[in-house]
Amino acid sequence: MIKKIWYFSVKLFVKTSLFFYCKKIKVTGKKNIPKKGAILFAINHPNALLDPLLVTSNNPRENHFLVRADVFKKPLVKKILASLNLMPIYRIRDGRSQLSNNEEVFEKCFTILKKRQTLFIFPQGGHSRDRSIKPLSKGFIRIVFGALDKYPDLDIAVIPVGITYQNSSTFPCKVAINYGKVIDAKTILQSNSKPKAINILKENVSNQLKELTVHIPEDENYKTVLKKLNDANVDFTNVDLVNKMITENNIPNTVKKPINFLKPLFYLIVLNSIIPYLFWKKQHKGIGEVEFTDTFRYGLNTIAFPLFYALQSWVIGYFFNYKIALTYLFISIFSILIYAKFSVKNAENN
Image 1 (cartoon, helix red, strand yellow):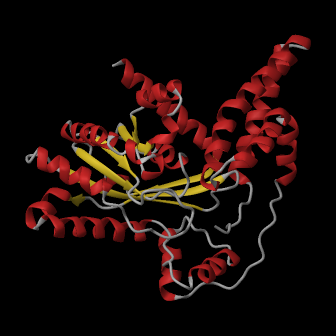
Image 2 (cartoon, rainbow, N blue to C red):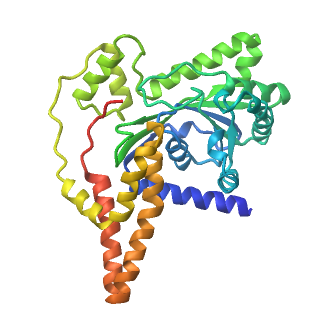
Image 3 (cartoon, helix red, strand yellow):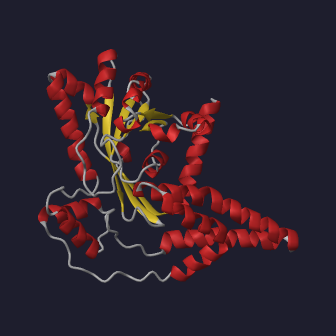
C-alpha cells in the first residue's frame, strides 16, 4: 500500500512538472487501453528518459519499465528506480557477462504479466531522434511469447505507442503521444508456428508505430524529406497530416519562421535563475548522447529551479516581508508557465 502511494505520488509530481515543462502534450487513443489485464506497451524511443515519464504520466495504469542498465550503477539511484517499478535490461555494450542477468529480468516480466499488470518496452533496442522507425529487436517478443508459454491461460494485449516531438532538444517541448490498437498476442501465437508468429507480431507492431509517429523511410531521400519538412515548419505533432505529406510527396513550400516575441521574457527568467542556468550551461556540454539533453534539462528545471526560487523567496522574506516574498515566488513560477505555453517553437533538424 505504501509503495502504491509513493508510486502515484511521484506520478502526480511528474505529471505536474511536465505540465510546466512542455508547451503542449497531445494524447490520443487512451480509450484503447484496457482497464484490466496484462498489457505490454511497445514504444518508440526518441528522447531518452523523458519518453517513459511522458507516457506513464498520461497512462491510467500502474506501469513497470525496462530501461538501460547503466542508469542503475549508483546504489541509491538503483533503490529509488526499483521503488518506481523500473528494471534494468542489459545490452552487449554493458558487457557480455552481464547479459545473463537478463534471464532474471525476463522472469520478473513474466510474473508482472501473470499478475495482469503492465510493462513498458522500447522495442527498437535504443534511443534515436531520427524521424523513422528502426527495425525492432526480438526482446519484447521473447517476453510476450515467453509469458504465454509459461502461462498458457494468460491473455496479453500488446499496444504500440508512438511518441513524436516537435522540438526535442529545446525548451519548451511539444509532444504527441498516440496509443495504437490492441494486438492479441495469444491468438497470433496459437494460430501460427512460432517463427511465423514472431514475424507477424513484429510486423504488426512496426506497422502501427509507423502510423503513430512521424515516419520518414530511411533511404537516400531521408535527409532531403526531413529538410523540406523543417523548412516548411510543419507541426510534427500532427502525425497523420505529416505522414500523409511524406507518403504523397506533397510537402508545403518553405516558410519564414515566426518570431518568438516572448524571447525577452526568457532572458528575464534567465536573470532570475542565473545560478541554476549557469550550472546547466556548464554541465550540458558534457552530456555524451544528444538524446539525454532534454532529460537532463527537465531534471534540472524540476529540482534546481524551484529550490533556487524558494531560497530567493526566503531571503526576500527575511530582509523585507513574506507578502513580497510570496508575490516574487508567484511571479517567478507564473512567468515560466507563460513562456512554456505561449512561446513560439519552430521545427528542428534531427
